[in-house]
Length: 219
Image (cartoon, rainbow, N blue to C red; front, side, top):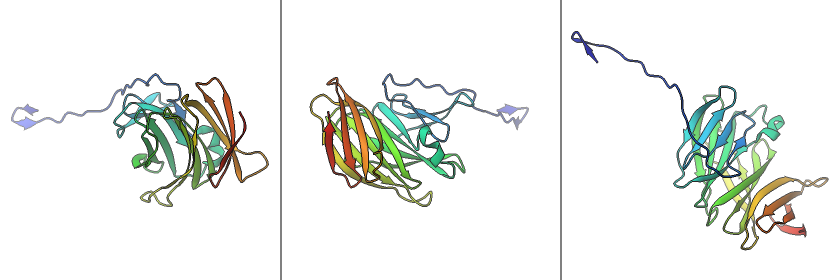
């Protein structure tokens, strides 16, 4: 701005960022880093409960975001005390799953990767466990009638690549699952327990080997 032949500097600072959460059941997740994620339209928003502000919006999806899930989530906070990086999953109505990385050192975000061949239709839910500080296992369900079990190994450095593998794919039929809960199988570290709730008004319980073979003892 010119003023008497000179220039006057004008400062600009952010006052407020607003974003409405998509009206979908599994959209919100609370992380061990004490941040909350949710999907407003095609983006992922990061909200701080302490400051009551949206800290960042992450672009990358081309369709509405259905669900988000932190790795680790707040229930695994006891495993996250020494982690310098936290990760976030997001899934959209086109079946795309994206993994994001948050560096706690410099508060910067990175789009790590898009999970290859995730789902053919919309992702409806995630559930995950931290197997170790560098390894997580998560399940994703979709309106394409499948539930997939994944393993992700985190990089040793912030610039490294994550390694993904699909451990199993379970076909559940025409009425998809819309709720998931994954946990360590009590008394046996080689197995995981996976519970699903679907539009068939049933609860399905699976036991899943960490190598990827699944069975359904209870339905």
